[in-house]
Length: 278
Image (cartoon, rainbow, N blue to C red; front, top):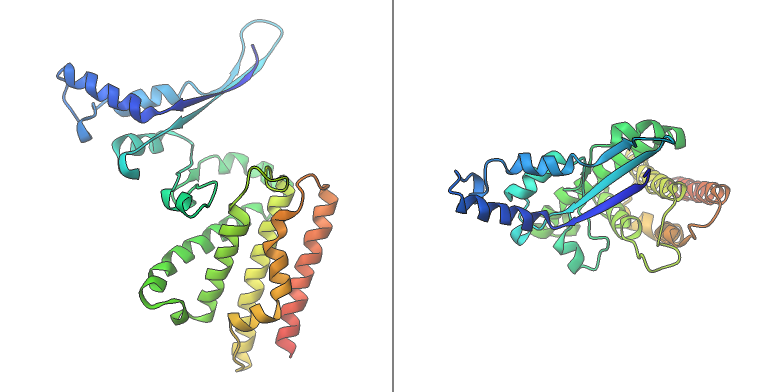
């Protein structure tokens, strides 16, 4: 009929367990964890029903079916056969994290395990909107990965043992987690986030990160001691503005967001430049 339909399947894990029971009763040769060898093929045939279609008949109509399948691995084990088979088939995967939910971080989507294979298809769209979007996305992903690697050191010997550039990584990653990724769907400012606001926030965070590292390098060349503590004490009002970016209404115009983020970017640059010149 030319509609764009979405189907939620909850849960494919239970369906796979039922498939395992039937396979066992039929005395079929079991594979990993007792599941039948054709588990991946059955999952693929299900997800392959999604896609864009051209409807038969007239007038000419286009429609689409989007399938969202929920997988419930026992104990959150992502090495479960159903989970691994699903991840090898689907084009986008959101991995929910119990630890994030316990910390009241919602949506509790783990940025390390989640992925999308549509980046290349959407590259032209994002380039038309902002040529820097993909590089900003990669930079934020790299910062979060660095934080994950440094967390092991912090748990062993404490945060004070980190170098100043590593402390900046930890603090910027905290801003990304708590003030960018974390959202409140029941608030007027966070129930949605237009792309111009998202890209603007990403630019500010990455600009702040780059300028902080640049400031450290300039002080090292001048043989003057500076650290994250000095930057935080000097730019505390500006850092508060960075952490409060998400409170801007998503209903604001694109022109408003351009002026708002440009002014904040200039404030970061001037603040750190003044710190260097002192």
